[in-house]
Image 1: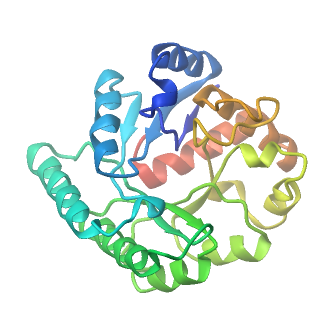
Image 2: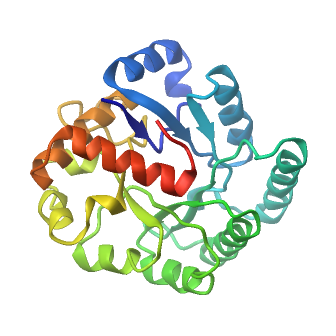
Image 3: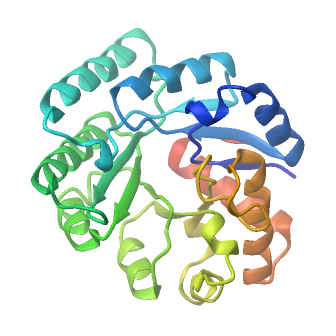
Length: 266
């Protein structure tokens, strides 16, 4: 049984000492592929390097994560767009499988609220222009995020609402967007999580993909430790229990969902 981790930051310092071992453990756990989002300009390079080191196993995205949006956002966007344009000019298809990680985050501060709104809309336009899916991060900003997305609803090819931890009403709003799915990770396994009941009540498995968000948000029983892609198996097991289906069914359906959105199969 094989499955895909659609969101892992394997390029960060937490994996600098033992990434080869992390990859081996992921493969042994059944992880067939791993998708790596960029979060800022320097991480575009580090993500691409990991993907060169592990070709056809790790796959890169390009984007400016909302918490990384600062006063220099215009220059950052210009440089990222140049990289994206060059990637399409040099190879077809581009190595980038999605625009991400992008979105809005007003959890800690609204200091750069207007800048975040501008950046997110610009990257949604990139997704339309290049017909790439979106990998979307959203915290305390669903209304603002959906307001922007709705303008491009019929032009987007799809994407993932990453790290979904919302309620049934929030899930329903997201699922109004065709070919968008919810990225479900370690929070599902927490004892305090309502997702185990809410997801089966309103979200078909056909609208879910698996993720870890490594090295963050490790699932039970690894909570509080460094997360890694192998642990996506814990998320899969909890989904199977919550939906009362076999683990093989969860793997099969989520793999189909990934193939539909990203064009990448196990």
